Length: 594
Ligand code: GAL
View 1: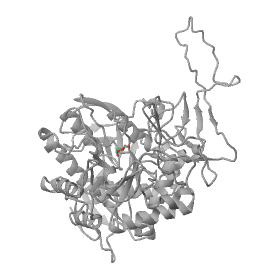
View 2 (view 1 turned 135 degrees about the vertical axis):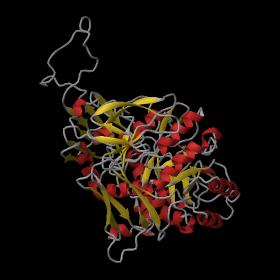
View 3 (view 1 turned 60 degrees about the horizontal axis):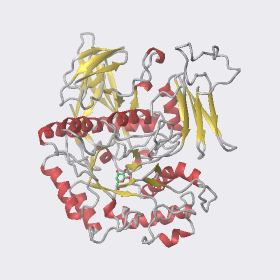
View 4 (view 1 turned 90 degrees about the horizontal axis):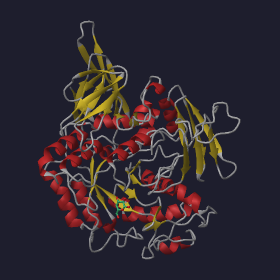
């Protein structure tokens, strides 16, 4: 879906396989942001249609001329107007208007209104690998240990459908053949520094132990033979939580990939409960479909919160209000450019998106996809079907290692960017439109959907397979190449060339980038890591380094520090670094600030 919706009509229904660009998507959030500095949120679980200047009232001032198609080349099939019309097929719906000096201000306020941005545990920002569907415990351990042997950092191993005793519909119980001793398996993985993430889908198998308890609490229709529990009922949440706690969370499982809660209407692959399904709470199928993904996220988060453990996971459908959910969106669609655009789009409405890597037609595409995913909210190789590994293309293995290592090295930087998301609502990865302080109309607003900001100071400009150079728009100011330090004047579009071993990355003048060693996995609670602090350019800079235990919700109770990394520049141009905020009895997780 494009970033600028002007002139488009948007039919906002949850759907994983929209056939056209109509507004249907995994997350059709009814919240839009105007370049005039305001945003509008429609708070409803109904499907909303928004006419973004795409319907024309007869008495509208801005529509002056009627054009004749026979003779006028300026004729347009869809004339635009200046007004937005929203159709909400129900009554009593709240509308919220968020104001701000810039679009970023508006987005920040929206995120704060939704509880602040999600803060993942530190390990969530390491590298993730999902194994093929039917791997057993032994194969999973072997594959994970291959990462250690080959010296590729990895924090999370994701299990796909085969860990369940039956997966379509799902039991949420371990397969006795493939995982005879789940506790032992999770413990072994934990010792080696790997967290376990479990794939699941929401439709409950008749073979599941919770099936009978859920029967009277589920919708009128089944999906793939499974129950559709009514998650708006507290009783349902408690039943599911209790089972998940015992079977997974209390033996150390770190989170979930909540799959297929979005529905699909492809001819050969159609599944979902119908819109007229009835649920015990009184909600109908349309409402449930719109908010199912959101309710699942809330339920799982609640369960981890009750254990004072942070989680980070994946989800395939979400809705408005999800900013504080530690879940990242993904898709079966695989167009690389669209994935990058989705990452940009997500930043307008409190969502996180991963351009996951699965396979590639060439080593070149493999590298380009891996480079991008390492600069995203969740760096993941999803090998559930292709069985790929980071070293699948030996000729480029060294480049892939370089980027997974870089992901690891940037952990303090990214982690602090997420903390900022929590504290002030600034999206850690965000579209350029949110960055531009200049007059938006001056720039090609539509076209800017293939580069983005990562954290405070980094601008990421991916190259796609087949490209050796690209145009990059650098906002006002001076920018430096992340690797070489080359200086560029901003406020204009520049052309950059880059070999396969490089994704163009620019740091703004005065940017401070704290980095740590490329450890095999994220530091655990209480572990200290040495920091290398980079400062770019000649302008003074300041960076808020977030420091907490990295794993619990103690930061919400005030147990954290914001350490200030400061660079001042004297009149001779000499730079001086300073670290503030380590005073007192604080046991920092960082050491050796160099
Ligand atoms: C899909 C999902 C994939 C993989 C697969 C397993 O719905 O998008 O990432 O998990 O299911 O069957």
